[in-house]
Length: 112
Length: 110
Image 1 (tube, rainbow over the protein chains, first blue to last red):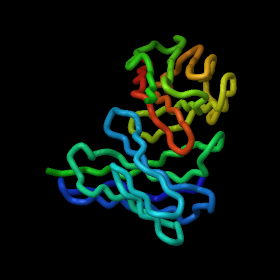
Image 2 (cartoon, rainbow over the protein chains, first blue to last red):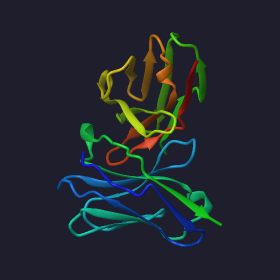
Image 3 (cartoon, rainbow over the protein chains, first blue to last red):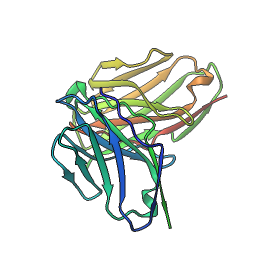
Image 4 (cartoon, helix red, strand yellow):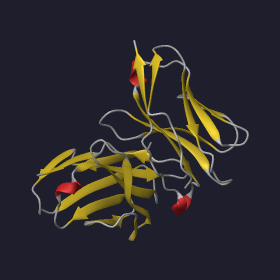
């Protein structure tokens, strides 16, 4: 799997949008971009994934650059409960090939 | 809806003792199943994954083993625990394109 680079930590004010960047310059054509988050002392939680097109669900939006070398996870209105470590992962996905390699992620702290 | 269970939630074991952690998934069939470990202050490390009953793939050599006796049951075992086995053990299941994690077992080896 390709490796990703994320900032170690970020801060965001409550109610504002949180934009978390991720670089994955060696991503292969068949690899998806996944985002997970881990709130302290809990298991990781799936947020969103995408291949080429931008994606949106009830939790977040995922913006992938045209060359697919970077992406941004957007939490449109961050709350205190969004404080967590956010992991950007690239993986080929599907069947027995679907394995996730978690890096150190970005610690997002949402401040009141 | 699908639910994943792990037990026990916490466990304190002496060095050299055996280990058995259980994970079960409800509401789905033939899921991919995974065991991860997160040591204190470190990232998640994939230990084992399974694509079906009796099919186990090991990612990291260690004194742990995994078994899948039933479609929706995944067990992590050790015959003799080491201090370095302490950590947060997470089971996950995957329908296709994402993984869903259980609540985890916090293991302390003394």
